[in-house]
Amino acid sequence: MAALVQLKPVELNTPKGLVVFEGPVTDSYIDGLSMNEGLTNFRPPDRQKEALKQITNLPDGMIFIARHENEIIGYVTFHHPDDFSRWSKHPQVLEMGGIEVSPAWRGCGVAENLMKLAFSHPAVENFIVITTEYCWHWDTRNTGLDIWAYQKMLTRLFGKVGLQKVTTDDPDILEHPANVFMARIGKNVGKEDIMLFEGMRFLRKYGKVVNMA
Image (cartoon, rainbow, N blue to C red; front, side, top):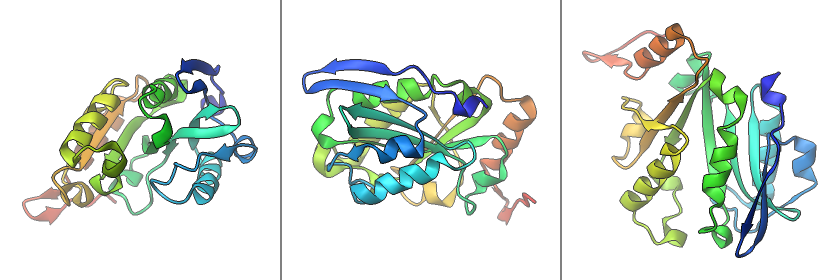
């Protein structure tokens, strides 16, 4: 299966040391590494490590990591949308669930190179990859950016791998004006799947919810 093909690791020399980008990694590989103590954006590092391991065992789940020696300093996750999400009803939608780089390693090109490796994987071309970016997850405290500057930074970063802003009436996105929904249509995605995705962007029409069953 294409999703199980491991890409050739990419190395980057930074002022703070050599960083290796690799993936998709297995749960056992993650288990043998430590998590940088700064990876706390979603949950404590030890719990996040377990979450990453679980994702590797999901259908089409993929984890790409940035590693310094035996420590994970950044990661990006891919998995199918949660069942409560409207996007889970689309068979060819894959969600970029989260990307995080330790504050100690920011400014070294880690995020950009991590994204570049992840989106070079052939499995990505079989899906419409989406990302739902909620401003309450953003690390404005450590970056010193306000939510609008952070939003601009994220959309510029994600745009480098082909993700584009997409309008939607998804209530979670509409909850705050800074929230962003982005998508990238893979080269192997068929027209019917593209049309279905376009139809799912707006489920409310004339005050009624369109039946997706």
